[in-house]
Length: 138
Image (cartoon, rainbow, N blue to C red):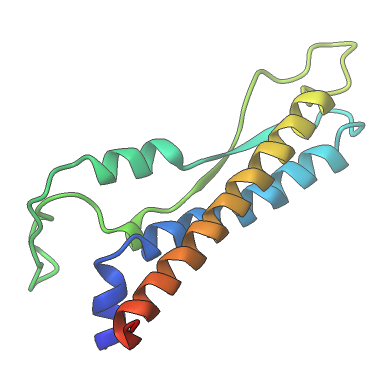
């Protein structure tokens, strides 16, 4: 309980969510690459960043719902923001295999790997800072 409340006031939940979304995005990109030669396959994307940006910039006022009928006050909690996997682009035209661009997918793969790596490093730094503040340094 105490650990959850302490970590909830840091960037740890946001970084965890970003890493979870990166894992999902990795699977979606891998699926796109695997189906690059599948006739009629439509490229898929993970939509998340806009939702996160909106939740983080939605103001500082927060409320606690004590009843399921109450309206939410303030922005969404990070845990309630869920990524969405959607098909993108137009269906393949006649004569086209599908709408997957392998070069674009490989670029997306590299960008996603960097996002995960940076998030993991930042998370490690945050946890180290919390541990240092608890233990103290002489």
